[in-house]
Amino acid sequence: MKPYFKHMIHGFTGKPRARTSFTFKNHPGQKPFKSAQKQIYTLEPSQYYKYNLKDYCLSYNNLPQNAGFPIFTWCHVYNKLMWAMQTAMPDKVNLSTITREQIFEQNLPCISLKAAIDAELLPKVTGYERWKEVI
Image (cartoon, rainbow, N blue to C red; front, top):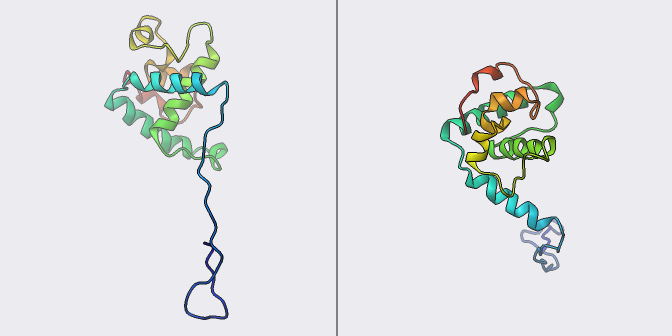
């Protein structure tokens, strides 16, 4: 119901409106995206790695070019990092099948936040050299 005041009478009047429930549409990219998202979170980043990502959020939001597009959580930075890595290295990285062992064996840039910024997967911020914790 869309309520409104009528003639300053105390009480709401209006017509009831039915809400429609949201349903996902079938899209060919939905299943690969879902499996990739599941897999990158099964890597279970360490608590210190998450702290680095949270700290990066604050520094990222202070950049003048990102004033209109703030990042609020470490998850957003983590997703941005992983998808940028797959885009930059499509022959090495497939997020649907990535494992911790693969990250350490191939020394992928997502191993630490500093390595990811050095590989230009994320924008540089001041003081990024201190984020050396491994995934």
